[in-house]
Amino acid sequence: MRIAAQPVMERDSSEAFIDATAAVAVARWLRDETRANDVRITTFERLPGGAIQDNWTLDAEIDGGAWHGTHDLVLRTDAPSGVASSLTRAQEYAVLQVAHAAGVIAPKPLLLCRDLAVIGRAFFVMQRMRGLAAGHRLTRETLLVPDGGALSEELGANLARIHAIRPPRAELADLPSPAADHARATIVGYRAYLDGLEDTYPALEWALQWCDRHAPEPWDTTLIHRDYRTGNYLVDGGKLSAVLDWEFAGWGDPREDIGWFTARCWRFGAHAKEAGGLSEVEPFLRGYESVAGRRIGREALDYWQAMAHLRWAIIALQQAQRHVAGGERSLELALTGRIVHELEYELLQLIDAGVR
Amino acid sequence: MKNISDATDLIATAREALLEELLPRIPKEQRYAGLMIANAMAIALREQRCDAQVTRDELARLRALLPATAPHSEATKQEALLALRRKLCTAIRAGAFDEGARRHELEAHLARTAADWVAISNPKALRAPQAAA
Image (cartoon, rainbow over all chains, first blue to last red; front, side):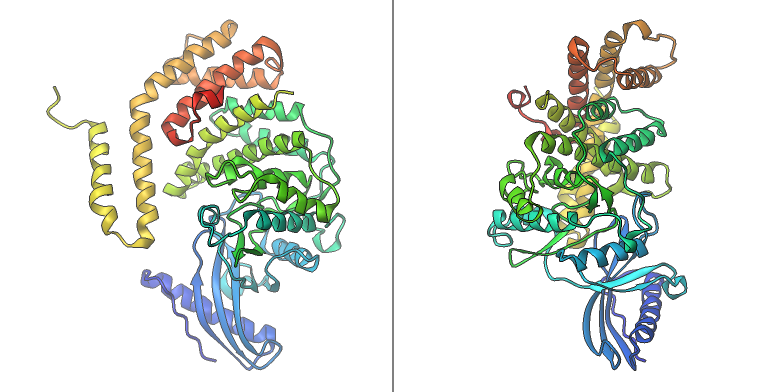
């Protein structure tokens, strides 16, 4: 077996050594899993981004066995520290399998490794999809997205395909059980989190109170992605190529995903384009309706956009805590904490505008 | 007149050096980190300039909003602020501000406080007053 690991960026030698060691281990594992004669890894590089997950480009030339040929893959494993609510790699792999089988545009999951002896952490390998995810570019560069409305429509239809997956599903038995009222259960969780902090956040408290009192009647529980937004999908040739980052998926009210996708905080500054900074909201809702057979009303959309800002504020506080108290000194995490002010400001405007 | 740079001047000068001397020369992969550092310094400068006034104003509004419970015994302004914020949160959750005039008073207070902090953390996110009204 020949192994060639070629890290692109210069890093210190101990890190490069760890990468090369991991590449050898992964090659051996791939060879056994695919019953190959030989596996040559030509690229093994960490992909940028991913505060919670660790993704690696993995190119393999496989000789013999079930996978004979060359493969462009991504290896996904845990970052050293994660957010408490994220799935394990085995759970995420199961979600991705179910979603992919249901026709959701997402990378095809290929192999799962639970054996910690291979690289020290569980991981899975999936098909590497072409395209660009960077939200600040997709929302600005018409060469990348010539028709934002068409892309929105595609994203709406694709989201509805995720929401067509209903509990119970044997493959997803170890996901947390769905709550009868997802909105109120979520609010209970956010309050419990805030109660554990030293500081208090009156604006978030007021938004939670408002959301608690104005929660619409629940929709039937479906699988929800919980991070379906611009920046988390790949676009290739102006079209959707894959939805990424399934680590927060779970059972819930499907409108949470619609609110998250359309919330002002995920438009990358293109505020007039409600559908993820790509277009107005109508094409997105039309695409969704074409598959789901129903659409969210304006009032519920406003409500779930407020919930989206709350969710992002809670996550930003969690990220800030990792820096302030979690022993993970990071300027990026520290600055994420400062986003809370902006989210409070937006929440108050949403509630003020939505006096009903 | 001051002869020696104070903390504010030191951070402002360091930020200028970063933006003008270092950033144009650092590799593309580190540019994002450089911009984050410049942003953090800008936030720190604005906070240093406005923090005292913003805190004083919030404290005054909180005392007006929670007159019956306004404590004066806390050792510092910061402690008083934290205690009053906590009381406000408890009252909000208990429904004391759900409707009517109390609700409007609360929302005016929260909107002012949030805008003051956005002016420190990311002033570009502030909307024009007429749009916010």
